[in-house]
Image (cartoon, rainbow, N blue to C red; front, side, top):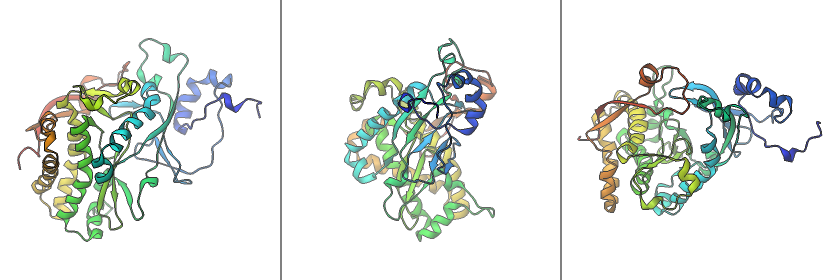
Length: 372
């Protein structure tokens, strides 16, 4: 209608809240000169996920989901999309997919699903992105990452649920986990063994074999169940923000492209294990264990012994990785405590920063996997 060439523009969705609160006021000159043009909705029905800013396409389930910037301070950071990481998302996907696809254990035995981030775009703000010392959230305002939907990877009869769903209870207090165990027909301990056998092997193998971790918290880790609601395998999402690699060089990283190496965060081996310790063991299992004791009759000590047994099973399966098992020690006596509230109360408060903060480490807690 305006006589403009569509080929001169990039198309991207925008979260409606982000448009009203951030894009319209901060990009007003670009909207006025039509370098940014607001288009009507495509009329597809979309469902917001736990993060609020990632949407599944309900009208077309095989379409890619979209991850959008949302300028809200949630837990530790403002939930924008950093330019460099966003643009590198497809390259990061190619790298982690390449590791999996070349490894028969990951590809054929665990059959882990890695939901690829296949396309991305960012729009720089013409002033904020060039202003020295500007708070980082003003450089992450407008962009999109397109992610593969899990539906295309599910076998007939399979169903996927986020790991966080296992902690949900109904109005009467009954946990979804208890209902899934009932439907499965398995004894609770057997069902938990199947859960840990689905979750842990791919995470452990990426850590030990490739010095690479995801962030397997309740939102990023997705459990795939068979038609009887028995856990069978793991799906993982959110690579560009949450994939970290060992700062100690490993030969398995030689295949990493320069653009991937430039954006992936690195951590010392002793801290790399924190992504499993904090994200999975403390963030999810700490709450699932007492729930299973209360509703399934599995004592907490036995719950953790089943987790430890799965870790040791991987050690026994891959004795050639013994040195890596010691380097990336998940069975250490104590775990460093990450304190997001401490960032807010003692470290940063609500002041602006020019870069993204890291979670504060304060003290340690006993590792329930150390000795059982």
